[in-house]
Amino acid sequence: MEVKFNHVTLTYPNGIEVLHDMDFDIDDGQLVALLGPSGGGKSTTLNLISGLLSATTGNIYFGDKDVTKQDALERGVGMVFQNYALYPHMTVLDNIIFPMKMAKIDKATRKQRALDLAKLVRVDDQITKKPSDLSGGQQQRVAIARALAKSPNILLLDEPLSNLDARLRVEMREEIRRIQKETGVTTIFVTHDQSEAMHVADKIMVLNDGRIQQYDDPQSLYENPNNQFVANFIGEPALNVISAHQLGTEVTQLFDGNVATIGIRAEALTNEVKEPAIKMQAVVHEVLSFGRDRQATISVGEHQLIATDVTTSALIDQEMTLFAALSGVYAFDKDGQRLPLRGERS
Ligand SMILES: Nc1ncnc2c1ncn2[C@@H]1O[C@H](COP(=O)(O)OP(=O)(O)OP(=O)(O)O)[C@@H](O)[C@H]1O
Image (cartoon, rainbow, N blue to C red; front, side, top):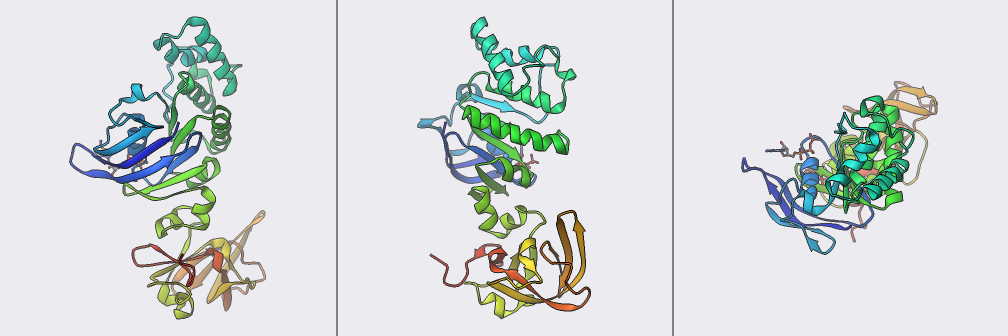
């Protein structure tokens, strides 16, 4: 089911507007991540979609239907929370059956559907166990099956992986993607972990200060960030940021507008010529190798940078010329808005 926000705002009872002019469409069948730092507005946005919160102004649509005034039950959403919230005294199967029992779906139908869902989320060999006998990942699978029990219009996941250890997180994010693709249910997923969002989502909405910073597919967010916030938030290691005056007009004149800072991706920086590239005088302090990865620490004037494509042949502690491939170099104005390369503005 398509979700549409039409100029939605939310003001909490304390009078503070925390979401400003949210205007977006989520296509039917997509997996969308709401990504941003703490306090950015992710949970508030999710709760507006679920109906747990009501929009202060603006309208929310599911497909062609205006659901702005509907509560969570009427909207038919399935929700999964970070703490699973399974019923501890019920078996896995009964946990999945429970919402269908409440909805008075007949016994045989609900049992068959619960068995099908247990199979879908791959806990069909665990159905007689209690939640406490399952691993965190298995509990989360059951929580997803339970949320899908009533065939929701939309599936909402609030930081579903944050209680799992690193290895399980990677496994479960692939599982969420698989389950979502198999069911085709439009799914919205809250996370503060950029790598999680980049791996699972068809599109990512980056939220900060209650505003959409950018809403795009993962590759475009990485390659073409709208502003300094998005460029900083997406990518590991974080973007290198250098003041414009450090690099001089030779670099700033490549861009249209008043350049305040330049951002350089760690993998764009190299000691071997890459064209087209900008040049800078730098000192390489150290090049460390970690298996197939490398990481160099560098200074350019007063700025400390991290580079992942500097070879071990670089001179250490001596000034040398480094190159930054233009595809990984972004210019920002004083407000952090991205400036285009000269002649690139459409
Ligand atoms: N019940 C509330 N009353 C007043 N302000 C609130 C309430 N809940 C959240 N806020 C404020 O709304 C803003 C957005 O919060 P929200 O919880 O949506 O952010 P978030 O991105 O989900 O953060 P987190 O990752 O920490 O959960 C914050 O400034 C927060 O302080």
